[in-house]
Image (cartoon, rainbow, N blue to C red; front, side, top):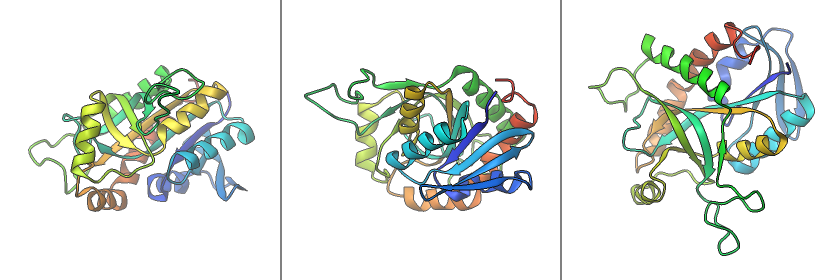
Length: 253
């Protein structure tokens, strides 16, 4: 079994993972990116900062697959909640991902990826189930509440469904409403997952995406996202991945 790749778009999302890698981890600098190769909680890993956006995520995914021979990829980070039942502090594990800003009409259907004949890319069921189970245990034990969380609901929820990706940070009520109307099944919005998913699909590499909801993609999204990023992003990422890696489940996946 090859290495597991763990990617995140912002340093705060993967900071605790990097800090927990074994002291002998090596750093490889490729294409203006640092790839940390070593062991994380007993699992051989390569961890990298993809940077923000679809192109950056696709480039990083291509590098970890080709240069480090990874056998599985996990993308982790924050997202804006879109579906009415998804709230700040919830965790979303992707069942599938799509690019909400892909539109090559009239040559192809709206959201269809040209020449691949598909709109959605399905995440690996086994990896996703392991992430979901660990996330459910994490929120059951209890996580620090965010300032934006619903005070009446102490325990966050874990969702499994569609994640929508686009090269836009949505912090506008009207745009969020339009996306909600157009994509009623989408649980949350982010800027990297579906691009990474397309690359993994084309290389035949299993992948999973886990997002923590930091805001509701409305007019307050910038402030809410920043606050969550600084205070809670690393808590969720490490809290969910650590027991999963320590258990050896991903070494045997």
